[in-house]
Amino acid sequence: MLFRSGKAHLRSTDNSVLRVEDFIIEYPGRDGSAVQAVSGISIDIVEGETLAVVGESGCGKSTLAKGIMRLIETKSGSVNLLGTDIASLKGEALRTVRPKMQMIFQDSISSLDPHLKVNALVEQPLKVWNRGNEAERKAKVRDLLTSVGLDPEVVGDRKPTEFSGGQCQRISIARALTLEPKLLICDEPVSSLDVSIQAQILNILQDMKERYGLSLLFISHDLSVVRAISDRVVVMYLGKVCEVSPANELSERPLHHYTHALVSAVPIPDPTKVSGRAVLEGEPPSPTNPPSGCRFRTRCPAATDKCAAEEPQLTYAGNGHYVACHHPRA
Image 1: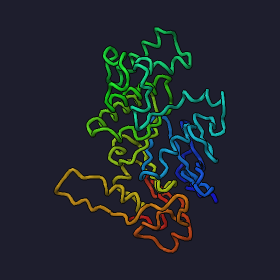
Image 2: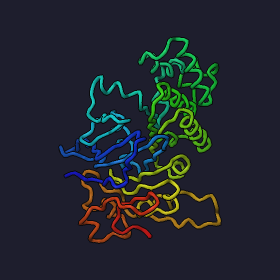
Image 3: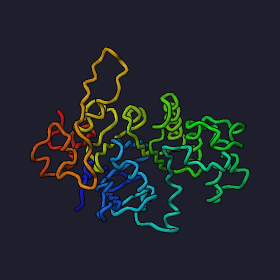
Image 4: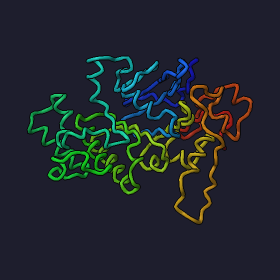
């Protein structure tokens, strides 16, 4: 059985960078059954836009990102990158489009080869793709390291193991930009960093986005971070999209009861204000046996019989806001 999230929120535009439709990713279960980590998701990103994907751990955010990058196998659906459907590409055809999209990971230290020096790490993609001569490559490496706030003379001949997590994430960003991609996928890039370092990395990403004309797919579970960097937000729950909205609109007017709980959990830096936090009861259902109808209904305070019988589809709620809920918040 295919579970679909709906595509009402997809835009018709000539400046699309990424358009994913009916995307399904399955893993084999212990009993031989298939577990859908991503269940019919559709998203789109236009030029210069940052789209954030948020949700609890295990909802399928990172799996979605890896599937788009073709780092894992997908069951079905399309991934249109700059006019080319890359979902079915293989071999050399897939290799030729890889420079157009790059990825930075949550664990920046593990994502860097500990045996290579920083100069070699950042230069490596240029060598693999035969971009420029040696002098041009070295100049570009120096420029990229400088642009992410690192001194090439200080860091260039040292290895990643000599740096902090924040410094390694800067190196990862520099490396990801060497081939001048159009799409940068950021998988929880600041979640393991201190708050002050998080702000620095977010500022670097914003600067690089403007400098290189990037579009970003930003994966996170932290809505305060998402609010600071994103233009639009997709909320995922148990492999499905339950809400899509401009970032500011989502913070001020969450319509799905799950999104409301996420927003209310963001700390308010004012002891005189009462947060009014919405506490969810129970644990997320197992993806091996998701609930019928609305997957959130087993934890939703507004659930009715209709929620068990019928899966809600994304419906327009004004101001670029879409929600998949039979009984959205007012």
